[in-house]
Image (cartoon, rainbow over all chains, first blue to last red):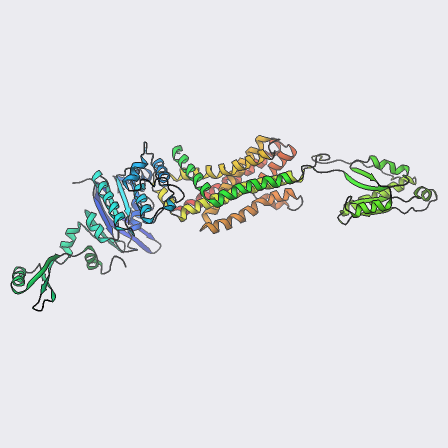
Length: 288
Length: 352
């Protein structure tokens, strides 16, 4: 059995009458990418805050690399990197100065800021003040900052939110490289495709509880409807849609009949998306 | 404490402070402006009162006033020229004795002595000269006062050593200079909270203790360095330098602690400036009271900066030493412990 990097045991937090996180239990294996999904207000941020030592759980505990976060904050924080959703860089400092500061805070010796900035595509702009960067550049710098200490666990909160496709792709590649290095990645995102593409498993959070946790393919299999979708041409040359359910005893016959009786132009399988599954489980969309 | 971390944080804060154009420029301008104010003010106090005198005949009793301490009589050729000099503001007061003063004394009649005063002359000067003339007249007519007067100056005798206005103002300037940095520090902290950089710091292995130590060093260092530079340039360290430096250092810590408190209640940059201005006004009251004696009373002792102002004033202007000021320093330490502790507690809460 793989060793766990993150373990949440009955993790609970409330603010007044509002229970933000309600006795959640999950674990993330070392080297795994976990996509953490849920609508705004589901309790994702509170969970991340408890896992990273920014907030003490009211009940339960969080273990990172076998250490209780609440009682080993500094030791745990030495092993993690956090990339926040909102840009929180020192704007009047350069990228180089930002990274060097955090390298000092982590006690990283022989830190090569230039190499890291090159890795995130900011070479040539190292000495520019961050206030002069575009949103994409700032986001890449945020990711670079979270990598300063080569963390064992990386928390990424919406790392590609609002970015152009090139910047998003660059960040996705870095995430995969980090996994390759052996880092465990806790990825909070609204982007279903991104979660599907990158995550080994995804967790759906809704109203403070984890309502589903599994590999994307397993969830699709468990909750999704499999179907074949075809475009056929009628006698007048007009295109029509046909759909065949793949999970009925008559599927084979229906496919045969389709090819016998119709002029098939295109045919492809249709899988449920993570968004569909989330709606099916919770009755609400991820962006609500 | 991790000194490497503290050094990195202080270095970061210094960069950010001087890259904030507003605070960098205001700090530089304030220093230069205060130095200019100091040096354009008169460097000495004239302790001699110049009085115009027209005396065609000087009665023997009146001759003694020409050697009186603190009075300098300027003689005029005519009553008219004396009157004109006082009218022109050359002198605040003038005494015009009549031609027949001796004859009148001899005849037992009252000679008509005319006193001239400019509109700006203080009431005290008018009264003093009038009393002096009456007294001289009594002496001249053989009726001296039947008492002997002795005078004793309690505390420091400042005769011949009056504190020039600019040296009184020096205290006000140095306190205003270092207290301003309190606002700069508070704004830096508020900016960290507003921009979320504090969250980024708090997920590193850096301890909150290191963070506060760095802020304390940065705030104190910035205020202290400016205070020290100013006092060195204006000659404020020529007496009791070690005591003054200690007081400045303690004052800088006090203002840094107040900066923490301001940052904990301020919601944004504007509110930190608003709270900062209120704190500056309160903290400069004791220095104002020293500049203008009599304008404040005992309640000023509840203002922590009173003990800083009092120590610097006494040490720099009266050469008063550690023995006279230890209680001030002790009280200041008490205020520092209270303000810094409250500031750290309030900020910790805000960071969470």
